[in-house]
Image (cartoon, rainbow, N blue to C red; front, side, top):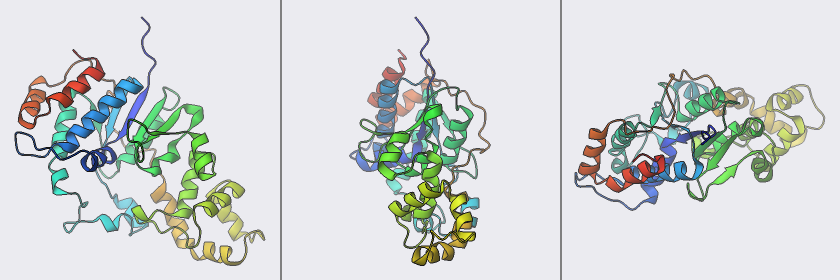
Length: 308
């Protein structure tokens, strides 16, 4: 029997476990700790592995959900999500589950990858880039920011879970981006997103420039850099209120690209991302299963991994 073709699955872990927390009814395990996010994430992994048959997988982690280099560029970046202690505002019933998720992944032998000073998006961008051309890459997320990584030529696409979850995700390739947003590449999507802004991340965008106008400008000029050169060069096609708005946003447009752009060079450690063929830590998995009532969820993942 021929070996399966290689395929890498990159999980935007926080996006998925937040979705699990809010989408799965609260369940309290024998230990008294809620487990709906843990159960939900493990079930998602089982579904993704069973349906997509990846050979490699990384659960990408936010070691820093609000990196200093992004805040230095735009101080409002994610500022509305700050908790009183300066960390991210996370429901307590979810926060207590995150260490259980980490332990569950470790017990199974599924790679979890984070880099200090970087978000999971940056880990994903770096891993997608380092595997570009070597194997197809599927990125699983509910975050549109990662659409910028879509690359048909190198078989990099996004499984977007915001509407249909992992069972019925939107499969985001360049045709999807063109149909939905009017731009044709991942790079163009990032440039459009700078102009449009994103209130959920505290990025104001250019006042008066909505998504459709942003897409038209990027389509007309090719790149944000070319658009800005046209503004500086006095292009007569840019006039009136539109020109005034773009000129007024100069400082924002200087800073925003480095905030919106997913890093391609995060210092990601070298790890074996191959799917496990055996349980890495049976005693840990057994303890988690018994103490937290996770037996059925572990069993689903093991079945998907084809580990007896």
